[in-house]
Image 1 (cartoon, rainbow, N blue to C red):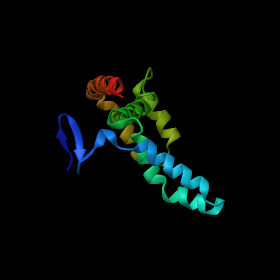
Image 2 (image 1 turned 180 degrees about the vertical axis):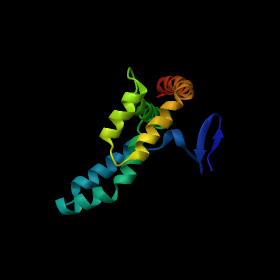
Image 3 (image 1 turned 45 degrees about the horizontal axis):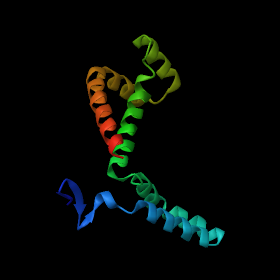
Length: 137
């Protein structure tokens, strides 16, 4: 379980701000390049999840926070872009044409849009956090 020491998160004595993502990525890349082509493909496939997680922490925890919060903003925009400037009924019709047979998607879009005031309040809060996290990265 992570704990905080002098405002910095640590896990088992390792300061999480000091996670060695760049050296790990460098080591994985160098090893991949040293392998024959057929082994390199297998190595890259087997280490893809570790590589993805490690890449998320290249800029430390503040950088990872920005990545996560931007993902939430992208999801918000993916829903609201359909509704911006259009009548609700027209949007539902367009969604039904685009996603015929996938009524659950249309329902999810409409339900998400119905929560727009709460989502906007949350988005403003998240943008404030992104700004703070970006200034620390």
